[in-house]
Amino acid sequence: MIGEAHRLTAGYVARHVPPGSRLGRDIAVLDIAQDFLLAHLHEAGFFPDLVVFKGGTALRKFFAGSEGRFSTDLDLAAVELDVNRQELAGVIAEQATVTLGPFRFEARESRSRWHIRVMSEFGSPSVSMKLDVGPPCWLRPEERPFVETKTQARYGFPLPHIPVMHLEEILAEKVARLTRSAIARDAFDLVWARSNSPHSRFSSDLVRRLAMLKVWVDNHGLGGAWRPALSPRPFNADAWLAPRDPWDDEQIGLLAHPPPSLADLQRDLTTLYGWLRELTEEEVRWGAANRSSKGEVIAAIRALDGGALADVHLY
Image (tube, rainbow, N blue to C red; front, side):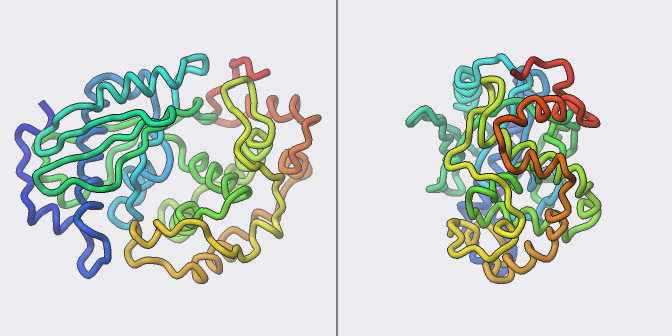
């Protein structure tokens, strides 16, 4: 059973937070508990057969490690296009209601969204994990090991390799989301990825291409699996790179060490992602989000190098 042989202590949990950080023990408890739960879901067979890991927490666990920001949510992508994702999320939530070593997890549904609360002998974070199951990845995922941390040596079990959304697609989703909202967490992750080797060598051409396709899908939806986003907008490079006032995410200060200056974050984002102005003619059409581009968008998604949807019906 995962966690039975753990050697965690309050001291080790406290040291999981960077020295001198404003971050509290609650964040450390949540971060460690996520590792236990992910290992449990892997053991239960959800990875790789049913879901793939994605989003900010995947970026921390499998790319950034302790150098990245903390993240509270569990964002998953379904493997199959036609699965009922709400039912799948419910099955995962049921499996996630479990005790693993020092951690007790309790999943509850509220307004069709699942939230997982963590309770432990080291503290019970006031922040819960949101569980979300989205549609499939566009690129074939890659199995990755957890980035090592000192705390993992106390777990008493080996962490598995887990299928994770391709880095370029994670970043493209964040670029697309920043087209319609000013979420500081997304900006922080984009700046981190472009500033830290070896991940800084990601393909900007692929990120740009994916992002423009995702902007189109955010505006119109696709194939029933992808619904239009809330308040979607076409992509405008000048607006995307311009200062945002205000950023709508105060939580970034509670998840990153040291907490970023939003002015510096904006400056770095503008500097490091200026290549988003260099759209090809077809990328300009996708980013403009004209409904008439649907056939072209579908063909481009199917033709992606390393794509996962080449043979999938998307109309």
